[in-house]
Length: 95
Image 1: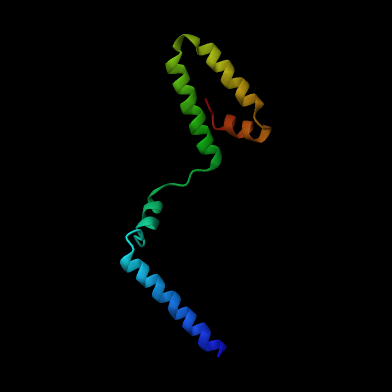
Image 2 (image 1 turned 135 degrees about the horizontal axis):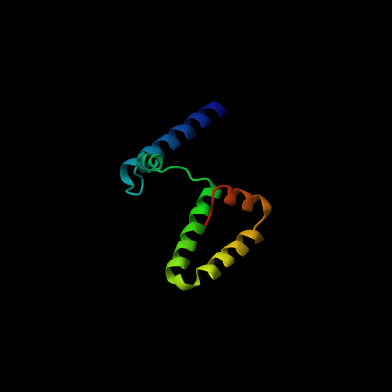
């Protein structure tokens, strides 16, 4: 009896998945996974470096006469980060 119930439940799950893939427009099968394969994985520190670098460029573009102020603010910000983050960001030449 236990084996019969397990087979019936498994069959029901397979049929439910098949029905969803055939009738539900939200399910696009492997398209989601194929799209992810195209995107490179960014490490957290690399993503943070890119965000900080873009922020610094925007500040420099917005306030070109205040370059020294922008640089000192960025330096102070980097100095206030945890030591591990600061060393990794500086190693990647952030801002």
